Amino acid sequence: MADTEKPLLIKRYASRRLYNTETSDYVTLEDIAGFIRDGREVQIVDLKSGDDLTRQYLLQIIAEHESRGENVLPLGVLTDLVRSYTTQAQSVVPQFLASSFEMLRDGQSKMMENMNAMNPMAKMPGFEAMQAQQEAFLKAMSGGLASNWSGPGQEEGSEEKSGKDDDLDTIKKQLAELQSKLNKMS
Image (cartoon, rainbow, N blue to C red):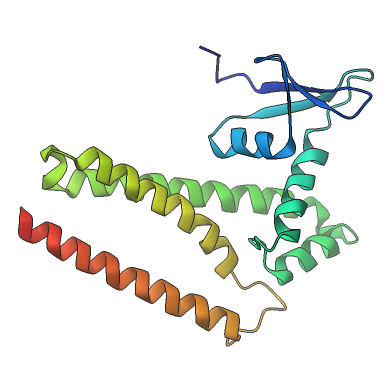
């Protein structure tokens, strides 16, 4: 089995094709995005020059997802990012973004730990499958949390936000109903 502590090395050939050095086959940007979603770190280097192209390709993956309508980054955040490249704030933005995502990941981990520690049903058959579904749900919702953030330039009462709030309220209600049913079972 591959050592997942080391980044997966992807080499870019002069033909611009991307080569997975672990499996000895060519990969696409979508394949690379899949590796990352699965928790794998990747490093993409130019075969000839040895230049690290990882940042360039990760930005390309984000741009492709955004162009397909999979909007995770609100317009205000994108605007602020562009603005940060032309101001003195440039030095603060990377640390802020890294800290924000680290807090989000830590919060998700702590929430899952608390759910496991407080739940007497942990010994119930099938609990692992239910827990995996909850983790998948939380992972999916983390993208939604990022899109609900309203930075400068975002109106608080926008129609898009109220629609997402309605969806979130519906999900919360469904989760409360499920929790109630689970409590009755135990």
